[in-house]
Image 1 (cartoon, rainbow, N blue to C red):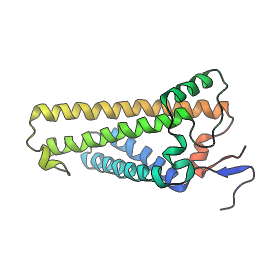
Image 2 (image 1 turned 120 degrees about the vertical axis):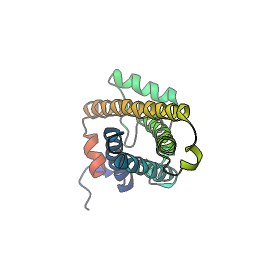
Image 3 (image 1 turned 45 degrees about the vertical axis):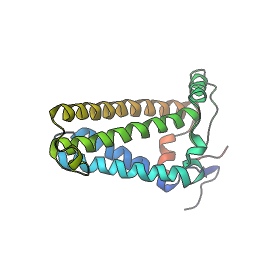
Image 4 (image 1 turned 180 degrees about the vertical axis):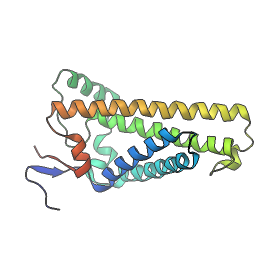
Length: 190
């Protein structure tokens, strides 16, 4: 594919694919919940597999995909948020400090969502990779695991809302369509 003028490829196909697979699988899992268990479980497994791939790609992948490119201290992320509120935030080709922190927090929240979901599946349905470990856990543990799973699923949904708000705000401030860049991979070169 020919690179458009004044644009640079920032998001490689793996990052973009991960993003949209994760969005789809999370919402499928969230919306199906207990109603369509087969779909809920496989959406959860998809999230888990996608997270493993993304974590590996964050260590060895393309420049802007690597954690070393965007993981920074919470202090830097907070300063970036303050600068954004004051409409003086620096533009980044890759993830900005707040976006980088958001990615780390989302990954952690999703890991807990997936692990607790697999544990609940083992305890409640005596199925899945942790069935042997949780099959005789008892109602107390089953309920506790369910609460943990629901907490992290809802916390992740909250993070998604904050993330989308950040994307909209950054798109307006820097006059670029960040959603489009996550589809085609390109951002302005400046």
